[in-house]
Image 1 (cartoon, rainbow, N blue to C red):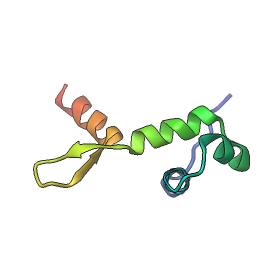
Image 2 (cartoon, one colour; image 1 turned 180 degrees about the vertical axis):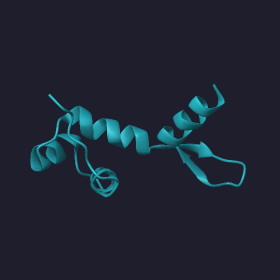
Image 3 (cartoon, rainbow, N blue to C red; image 1 turned 90 degrees about the vertical axis):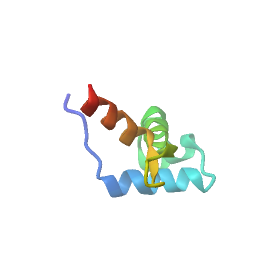
Image 4 (cartoon, one colour; image 1 turned 90 degrees about the horizontal axis):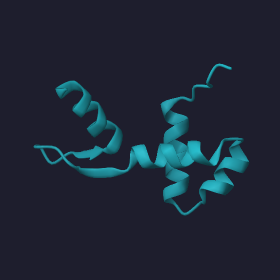
Length: 70
């Protein structure tokens, strides 16, 4: 079965709702998603540091940078 793709805006809105205090379970139920999908999006959007200019870097951006270097 082909994986469903979600827009960046939709993912960001789910992460925002999570960061505002909604649980991963309630978001998964309301939007018909797997809990693991919600928690994965939240984890990738987590800020883990800053770059040399002081701009925040998310886990997903950091992983992409690591792949470029390798």
